[in-house]
Length: 511
Image (cartoon, rainbow, N blue to C red; front, side, top):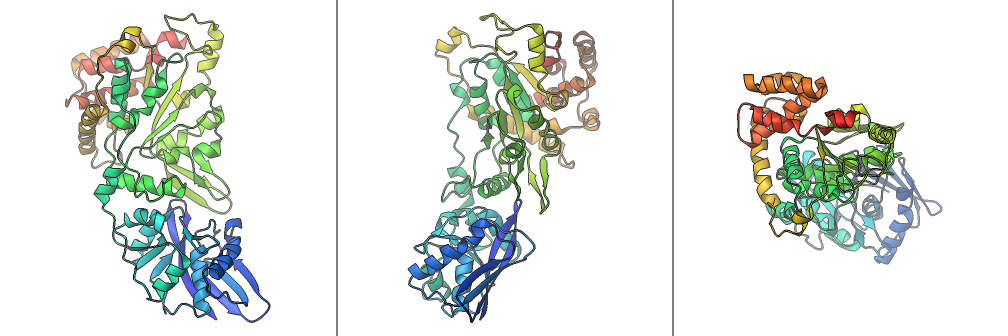
């Protein structure tokens, strides 16, 4: 007896349909799964047989062959359990439904017949919608996530027996509904706020500019100055996440298994802070079947690299492609996948090995050679992709103990949103979305200078010995400062402020 059920699997961020073919034949009882299954799929034999028996359903004492087609693509994970069980029961006559092609069936089975949640459900629902499949049968804990795609019916189940009764029309399961706006609002709360930061007004201004123009930023300062505290609050001042960005971010987090049970969407900007011992595969993504790394999990958000100089140079160099292209391409012998990786890089480091070079409150014990070696751990090509370098000094005790209330993140975010709207209008017919992505051609077009601004910048190049790279970075930052003020032209005051945010270009740091 031959039966077919339909499931889905993932390649990168996209889903593709998998046909679960089940053949029951006479012979000694045997259970075989083919179609390039990994270890987790092979172990489905034990889960499926126990779940069927413990659900008081008949498990056939025949030779069972399950084929997962297309057979030339590696299958992984436990999401095929429910579809395999349904295919066996249909082949054995326990399910009367004539055509199962109208459903995609997902879920991991427990030994007692319960259905557990799986990863990547949002991508599967989008695939079902694109193929005009009637509905998706999946675990209850994944229902809200899949229901984000309003064009497909989502049937949540809690057990194998419930699924069988539903397919046999013995019970009715209402399609799960999800209010997108409500789901986004529920998950859009940040636990931290800029109002909690004492002092550091210059640094907070630099972070506001970085968020407004999506500029990568490097903070340099002594231990305890608040670099990490500031970095963790950057997502709270970034532009409000759009529904499209939320869905794209949720897909990545779902594939990685980072969503909470019953969570519909990721409603806040991601903040990822990997340890400096991370491997290249952990940062960029990889594995035998490539999985998303930290750069993809921070897509539409912030990737924070604390103690930048402690990261492996090889790992840091691997950041150059995603910073340039906004995507990560990972090639393996079996497959090649591309994950989105458009993030804002925020890095922090001490100015020297002891951490106190330039600190008026502590004496630096490092030699000039040690300081130079410490700074040179971060390569020029990587620094070339960081627009803003800002010194973070220790907070004065008057500021720390003062009762002055700092500006909350919500107020800063309003200004950032307005600046981003200006940029969206400016670049609406171009393949860029923020000032940080401007090429020299775009800079010539969108960064016109008056006579006074040209004279100031010419003087700065001469006095500060700015490179051509630094020159273009200063113009990009100036453009963002002008956008925050709603100005069409870049003024000399904007250039003067932008020059403050390139501390590594000064002679003090280059010697």
